[in-house]
Amino acid sequence: MASSETSDHYDAAAHGGGMPQLDFDTWATQIFWTALALFLLYKVLTKNILPKIAGALEDRHNAIADDLDQASELKRKAEDAEGAYNQALADAKANANEIVEATKAEIAEKAAAENAKAEAEIAARTAEGEQRINEIRAAAADSARNVASDAASAIVAKLAPGSADSGTIASAVDRALAQTGMAR
Image (tube, rainbow, N blue to C red; front, top):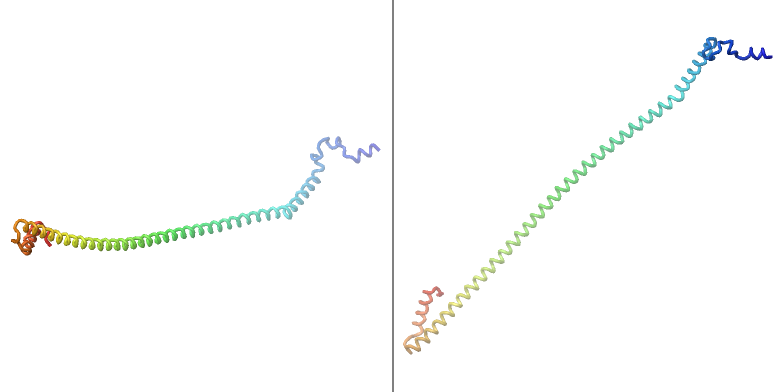
């Protein structure tokens, strides 16, 4: 039985005593099985695995492209919004400037009206004051004339009783006042 076991089993000593892969007698079968394994691996890769990888890569590429498209669209919208904001800001500034100018004009108009009113009031009061001063001057001149006439009459009556009449005294007082600038 020992001889049949040795004949059934591979005898390494009989076949060169090395690695079975290097045995030239089995190379044809090894090449066949290697080619078959590579062919099956190729078929499995090309039919199942590589399409899934290619699909995943395509999906990823499409997702990135969509994200880039969305980003460019959002960027465009942001630029549009910024433009609208800048336009609204410029319009608001222009409107504010118009309001400021209108308010300045209104204030200047009111100030001019108030100044004109104040000047008219001052002119009226000045005219009224001048009239009152003229009246006071006239009254003072009349009072000075009366006082001077009374004093001259009293002096003439004391110095020369019965010699001067009131018309002569009044004309003498009027001449004296005219010389001093106090005449009417």
